[in-house]
View 1 (cartoon, rainbow, N blue to C red):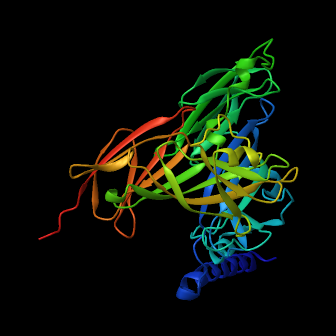
View 2: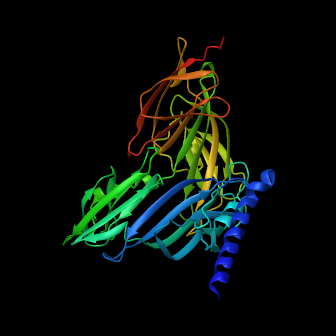
View 3: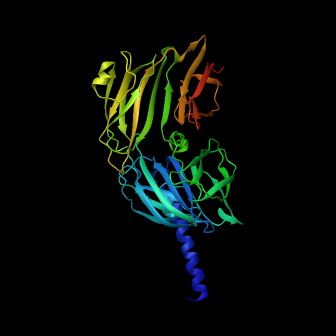
Length: 414
């Protein structure tokens, strides 16, 4: 092709890309909703030293109601190979291809960089409405000599990680020499050692990890190892919607993923001193409504539920769902309203919330008309569109955190 023709062809390509990129923007109200996602977790498994390659196992949830696709950006500077994509609910492979920014913009991903590429995943069905989800697993191999390289016999992994929940696993036969980001240090069943963390900051985690060869590092088999659990990979979440404190009541919903084959029920034990009402539940993968029961005392034992130390005052809510099949999982959201005069109350003219949190992710929404005064545990504060204060607590520890919140009434403006 003549040089001038080549220039003309490239100019035409650029013009076409610009036009395609601008179409969703020009469509205005006709453009698709912006892509939203949640529950992202990334696991980096470092491959052979000197290869500059690492395997990425990426879990993410598409959350835009009605979305038929999910777009995952391919990081610049990395060469992606060996991609596979799975539906986490069914365990089955998903269809995917690699597209540019124009296709991603048409699918609800904003951007003007025409060189950006994405893995476009075709979901098994549109994301269910009313908070439904489509859970996706993307497995791929990256080659990136700037992120993973050797200095003598020392391997170095240095990478800015924007996802908040991450794990980095060393190759077999390597020990951690240095690791700069506060993390759990966990050994795999096969003997490999790695780190895992939940980055509870607005910035990306600038991870720098160095390791050297070591002899005699075998997998731990003691009872101590059985006590260890990767906190960042847990995905239990809860949202408390506080009613006016005079009522001592709060609505809540909590999400849970069940992956144990044969499991058919989730049991929520009501704390002593609390009473429960208005339970309901949905399968977030399908949008289906689930069956529930409130059981007390001996009825718990008669139902054959696995609840320890049942007394006459024991109370549980049992949410039932179809048996989980091998290789599959079920994501459920459970709604309840609780009344607890001991832990949620008024002290004079001050709202008091005094409750311990065991889940990794906990959100408290103050009632309308209240201003946050105190929080005993570090918290991320935001304001909802309706004006209420939203408090987000991340507990990256394996134990509970004792959260004490006080709030004051908002005075009317003059």
